[in-house]
Length: 245
Ligand code: NDP
Image (cartoon, rainbow, N blue to C red; front, side, top):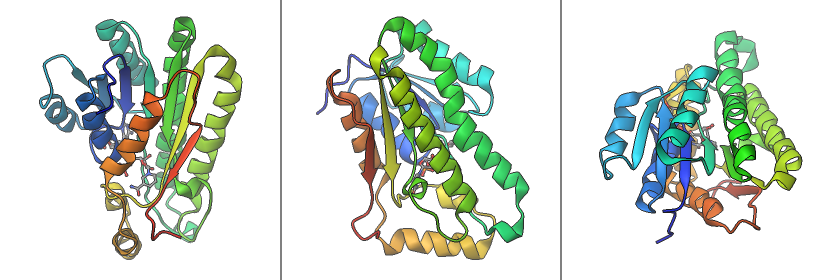
């Protein structure tokens, strides 16, 4: 078992899939957690599995800076500091550009790009004052390539990957570590938000055709990045199913 009992971690987007699996893994490792998302009932369920006070659920929408800031401040209030911010919230309503789903494009920009930026804006001043910290963001292999129906989602993940690398360059000298977690197809609720039934089916089928990873397998990558010594920074981990080309 990895001992993370000396870590205080805030996870954005912890109510399902990768975020929920990571919350459970880190809590088993002894970390103290603030877990956030919009579905508070799911967060409460995770918190109830661990000793009272170890996992604090906070309802927060990543597009709302005040709510993000409240969640991050909660870690400092309850546990005295924040060692790790894990920006994991994301959505993937795929569609061809010709469908013109401007509302879904706007949501992806707000959640996938502004979400991590809101987290950075809230956590970085605290981490700089502490003289240490670690910011992790879930990106995607879609942040390295594009395919039909994926233009906007890939665009948001390219943007977030580049923002995270800029953060690394700006803050390395201040002992702030950064990690980009880059999953391939992973079983979760992500494809359930695709509005076009045909596109949803193609993508859901793809996930099972490549024997998609479990969310627990991505959680192991996050755990590894967090457990590294202060002088070792895992800048990016690309973790994909063996069958995914
Ligand atoms: P899920 O849909 O299971 O989880 C998404 C999480 O994001 C949920 O906890 C959800 O919580 C949260 N979330 C969404 N919108 C918001 C919001 N506005 N404010 C706060 N939280 C929000 O999917 P995954 O676990 O797969 O997704 C996690 C991350 O992994 C995403 O960034 C996704 O892009 C990325 N990823 C996933 C891959 C996969 O194959 N599954 C592959 C590559 C990357 P709630 O709805 O309760 O707010």
